[in-house]
Length: 121
Image (cartoon, rainbow, N blue to C red; front, side):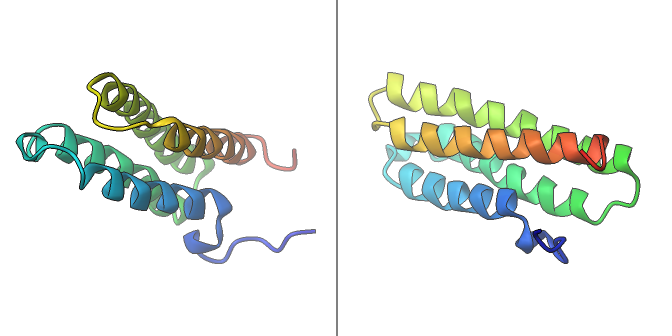
């Protein structure tokens, strides 16, 4: 049986979300300079929000409070899903690998949020 996480950094979902942020920064560094205050900024903000909300929610005491932060992370994740579609449609880059990475984070985040709301499952 796995040991319970002592810090947010022990969470697999946080680790995967952090890796996604690093990949988004790498991807967006190649965007046209005209996007610096547009798509680049929005995409990075939304990506960072995923592991940031996981981290913040980790220390919350009540299940409802924790779940609210996980739900905010899920919203940011969906925002990133759209930015990946937009990036591809604008012809800035192939986003298929990042989409797979995002899908993995999505599944882990859903499982984690569900485990908070239904302890012992």
